[in-house]
Length: 166
Ligand SMILES: [Zn+2]
Ligand SMILES: [Zn+2]
Image 1 (cartoon, helix red, strand yellow):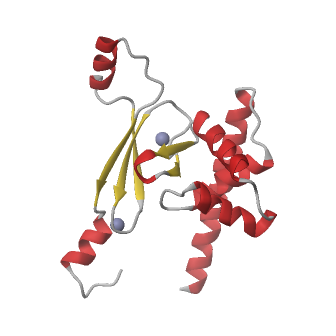
Image 2 (cartoon, protein in one colour; image 1 turned 135 degrees about the horizontal axis):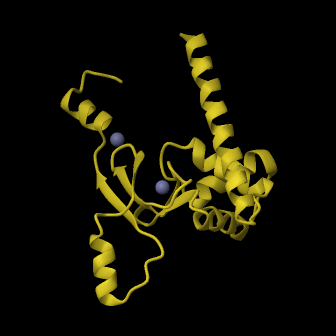
């Protein structure tokens, strides 16, 4: 069991390293640089299974590089958002790693109010409805992030079946 867990951890680590390398390539292709700090901030957001606030990121950063000033962390997060690597979750004032950052898409985030986890479903567009409305208003869309709040499967299962401990 322990060995299995360690293997899973290693696999997750490899997948994460691949995501980080892909992100660096993507930035380079656009003439941008994924600096060591930006890379580390992305790594922290990537490792979390829920939206992280800037201060959460700062706390984790402090463990390996000491205190980093808040504006520096915000700038790194803003950079990652501008590159589509991270989505800003306004409703919980947090940041999540994009699950499909290689291509442009509208993010649809399902956020659990009980455990705080979030799952992204990348849509090419919300059936053109928002685009239609934006066109009618002559509004130029920069990004669309739909935040859906509720209770995730695991939490609903736990409530329906209080004796089951996942
Ligand atoms: Zn996304
Ligand atoms: Zn949940």
